[in-house]
Amino acid sequence: MKKIFLTLIVIPFFVLLAAFKPASTIVQFAAADWENSKSRAMTEGKLYFVDFDASYCATCRNMDESTYMSERLASYINKNVVAVRIDVQDFDGVMWSQQYEVEALPTMLIFNEQGELVKRIVGYQSADDLIEEFSAIKTLNPVPVPSIGNTPVPTPTPTPAPIAADQPMSKTNASNNPSAALTITSNTTSNVAVAPNPASTGFGLYEIAVRKQESKGHGVQVGVFSSYETVLSQASVFKRRYSKKTLIHIDKYNGSVVYKLILGTFNSKREAAYFRNDLRRDNVDGLIKDLSLMK
Image 1 (cartoon, rainbow, N blue to C red):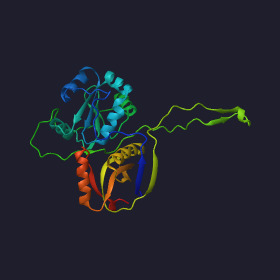
Image 2: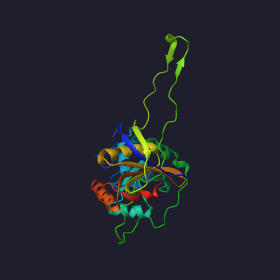
Image 3: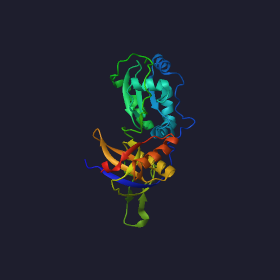
Image 4: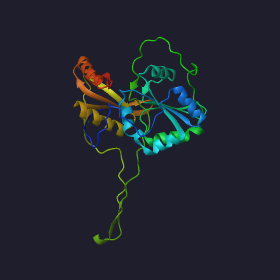
């Protein structure tokens, strides 16, 4: 596949706060630890949902501001699911993320009523996506999980590298339905009937200017996304906060199109590293990329 490298200038219609966790979400996560929450789910005949999270994960914050603010999802979870959030930067979070081989954030696991892992999800999920996944769980069989016992045993290990944030890959629900058309019932203007305006829909309104970016220098990759609307919303956030050239590299991952969000065009790797340090002070991590390798 021919890879396309674009410079994106974005004027946001709305702004998502990517790097800061809100004080609370409408969806409530259980305060108990993993084992107690899982035991409670099995006792109550509910699904067990685990959301692996980190403060530097921009997509996780996006879900806090959108997915987990859904009244419908909160109501569904309250009746059918025990949900917990695991911080991969905590000691217990490191153990659980290693046991379940979590390599990207956000990663979500769903266990059935018998406590068996039946679904692994990576990437942004809307409220409708999660409800659809929960509703389909009873038709699924358990999926393999590394066999290391029910409770991981702490062992002295080197501090692991941070789990990559904002990785693909998941769907987001985007409507493909055309809007209502104009219906003309007569040749006279007095008999022109206009269908009622549909309810507003969509994921945001943007004004963009796109041009081909020369592949040279270095940049800092802050996310990989599977949907165009998500990368646009995240691009608007970073453009507003850091005033750096915002680049999108269109590539393929496991046969699916993905969008890599990159900030800046720096003359040297050292300059890119300085900017990455600025990002880290805001709890946002990134990968330094050689733009000459992105065609």
